[in-house]
Image 1: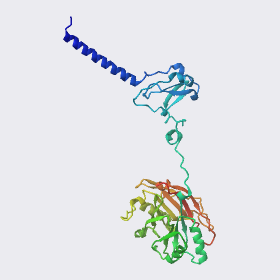
Image 2 (image 1 turned 45 degrees about the vertical axis):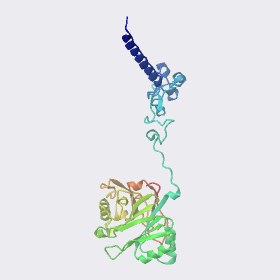
Image 3 (image 1 turned 60 degrees about the vertical axis):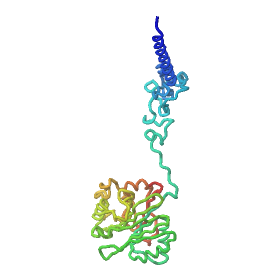
Image 4 (image 1 turned 30 degrees about the vertical axis):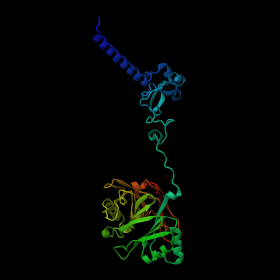
Length: 377
């Protein structure tokens, strides 16, 4: 016969076994039913429309697919399951060589019903950029005027052209007082004018007229590099809405177009950073070039001598918005002397370009312009 001590030990062992068994059963119940394998006969199909994905295990991300007529046979009851749940919405089913199969829907090359351009651009393509409203667009223009006619009638005609744009660069200013007279007529606009520049007797200034809502952050010229250009560039840093950009204007000497363009390209790779100028306004960021570059016809052939293509120091590319076959002059020639060039970051905001029609007598150059959206920084 077993003594009391032995019986006590046996009872304790039995109690432990019972507790462990209860725990195992409890865990098993929380895990839900066993994995269900799809019957191959239920997976036969003729097209993708025949197939539906099925859940094969509560909490297990191992779906399968069957013909939709057998879908009701594979409903799992996961009541009481408290483990990690699987997002079955990312799976899709297909008819592959007569057998229903499954896979993640994003990345299969097809834009499925549970996908769109937001959650799966790989299959559905990038979402189209919604067109900006008028308040999110600015027009920036450049106009070469070889001297301003200061008669009141002509000044009014100038003003009538300028007011079509948010920012207008005016080139070829001989007398600052002439530009000041024009500015006095521009209600709701502010003005900035450069120093007189030029290696020869033909001195010129650059001027800019911009709406009050546009903030001119800084301006600077490259007159210290006078030996590189007849009329060195004038740079301005603007902020409009949430967009910061640099606008550079230059009048290229037609007698030395290629060399001056190459000098500009070289300098844009190594622009010295003015301590008063935030670096965000320089070449690696949004940068636009506008002006009478004399970059066409007898003065320059871009296909033979391409310039301003890429700035390797900053890994940005330059885009010439106005094509070579455009006409920016009013005289007998048919040449794209005036140009707009922007870099890669500014290209994200670029919308379109144009040549603004004017009546003869105001200038022998048309104003050129480009529109940019300001709701994309």
